[in-house]
Image (cartoon, rainbow, N blue to C red; front, side, top):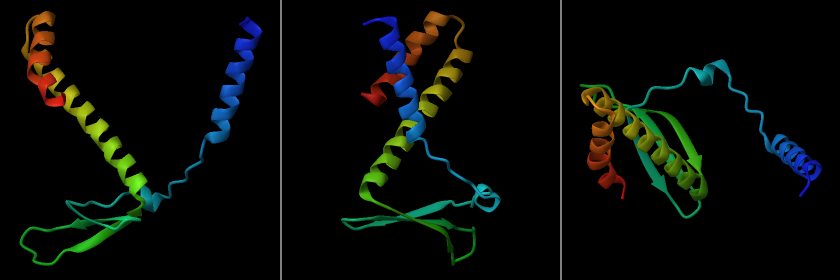
Length: 121
């Protein structure tokens, strides 16, 4: 393949990526977010309903602050995205704490592998 054809393929890929981009708007009200310390999930064959609730200590009643309804496919994507993010944060936190507690780089790498690797097998 010549340099010209590689350049054309790259340009075509960039145009395709630009066409597949979505412009997402976030209003100020939504950007503030809503605090939740409890989530309840219900589902059927066609949808998952996730209620985000704020539960206050000593108060017997709680209100649903937000409800999200998604398809099972999107629920799976959300699950995998959260799993990836949480496992990354877990690894990063433990790597940093082990690194700071170890004196040698080799010792840190060995400790990190022995302590964390079996969890993710």
